[in-house]
Image 1 (cartoon, rainbow, N blue to C red):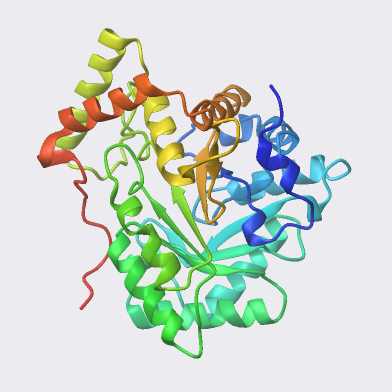
Image 2: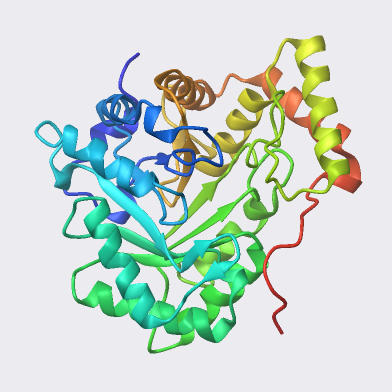
Length: 348
């Protein structure tokens, strides 16, 4: 496999806009997705990913031992891959399923703990994690602490993550107009930029042009296992009818077209997130650097498949797949296409 085109444009140390189109997601290095994350080939995944130019990682203290396992793997390859050659993103504020602490003291302590776990003296990007679960004022106070850490050089960029896209935009717009915070560097939305839910694609330009956000990240592009032929994880919050419909579509697609829904959904999200209609002289689609996909991979094989999916989409020859995108969304129907589920507390 040749190196993707974007690798030639990246030279360390990396800035926010240098983050490659595919970011290695650390949520899968967690007992929610794997019985024993310590047995996962994290070091090998990072070696291959970095060698292919995918030099950005995303994790969180909420993801079990993910930060520690990534830190251990990075230490093992530090001779070949020193710190300035990769980009580290993590989060703060979410502790457990129903436990959050957005106080400035806790945010600072969380960031310092992440530095220790990831064996680094600085972090490239820190988000407040799942902001819809706390009050607006708590989020603004936490963002002020992240800005203070940025001004101290402890972190380089800061932002927010969450599920409801409209609420993320509301907070981003407020931050831009708050002289004590200012425009956010990045936002991460999950399960809203996928084959089942395209809300992020419809709103992403507003983050850039109205809220002044520099970069938008799209996570959970197979919607936390919803869009695959295998069983949806038990923790998934989607309504049962949506789960059943997605499973029916996945099984039918596999039987009638010999196509795995997870592969199709991955290609769809990569195309819609990363590429607009611009092409180079050879006809390849051009990547819009204001967007990246956070991709969870649990093996080198999954990583390789993701890179191949990126290159396939970039070639702009996937006419059959585009017809299948339309088929899946038609089968989802008005009831399930762009259907969302409740997340967080009520806000005024």
